[in-house]
Length: 200
Image (cartoon, rainbow, N blue to C red; front, top):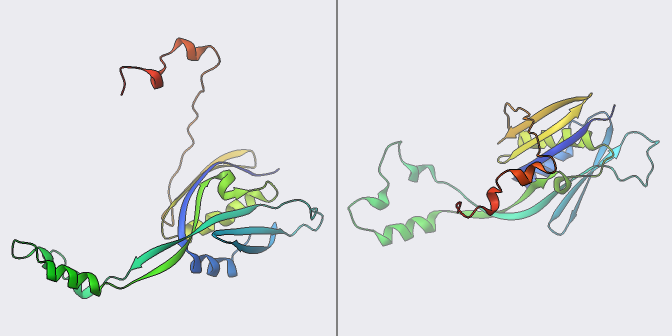
């Protein structure tokens, strides 16, 4: 029985350095022997290497794709934060204190950090069919170490549908809702809400 992934959507972000650390020694599913990482300009491609030798070398295995972006990260000085509930120094005294604000801004240190962003739907983030579900399991592990973002998916495992939802590194409860799509002919009898002049 082949497990498949449907309706995958990801907004995962993690520092590129953390992504490299994770893929250095990941806990891989039994079908995957190793992981290949390639960076092309601002795209990170993580490909599965099949354990099964009978798989043709011309069969493209599943790969995860992430865009690499730079974000400015500001360091917070705990001394400036003050105790909980304390008033900020910038608003004391009624009027604006421009000198104090400029001084505070100069003290905040920042650095540019590269992030791996696994964002998009299934075809964007998880490509190719061979070893697709095994690579999806790897993506779920990435989601558990990502500092922000959400991974949602519906997977078919042993002919049973399973809902997956991981938010900011934590697994959350998820359910599958079945909605009936309108059959041909039924749409014309109903109200076309998109073109309704009474709805702005």
